[in-house]
Length: 252
Image (tube, rainbow, N blue to C red; front, side, top):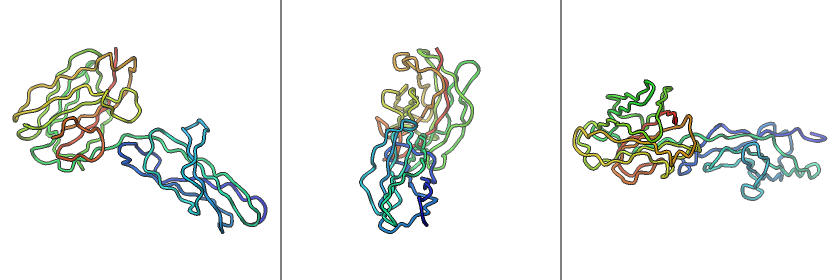
């Protein structure tokens, strides 16, 4: 080529990722690279989405690709390219954006007697979660369906859970991502219960106004059955169990 090369484009095959134990890595590459790559150097940069405040991802390299282990928040990415031939030139790629998503949780062993077989939670305004005889989900994780459960802050609800067998030694933990940052923090636990027997009694669920702090509206709820307490809300479990996610709306 002669003259100024066209602007390359940063691309990725994964439009979203998650920060859960770096569960979902991503790869950045370049397209429309109509320049001489001989001795070219590449420096990838990231910025919070829309902020245009760029930080270097490592140091300049002869490799045009970048593999990220995950991200904590939605981010923009671009690549600075130092071209040596025919004259030294620095060009900046077009930006690609990777959004955040919820990480699935994979149980090592969801089996006949250690699964969330029934989960029933009546809410308000005629809404209810009524999952019965659902069996083991693929990889021990069930994504939410389109329906939404409505819960009122500071109100007690009773959830019914069965595991398909003797639940002794199992724990049910429930989180709501109240700040919608795609992470279920320990401060967002609304119920943590030790189970026992074939038909455990009702589990009390309450969303305290003290942790909501005005964050009403649509959120994601995670229900996890584990042999570990406290449970880890994401990533590979070290035991048996299952995870199910739901959509909830918190109202005052």
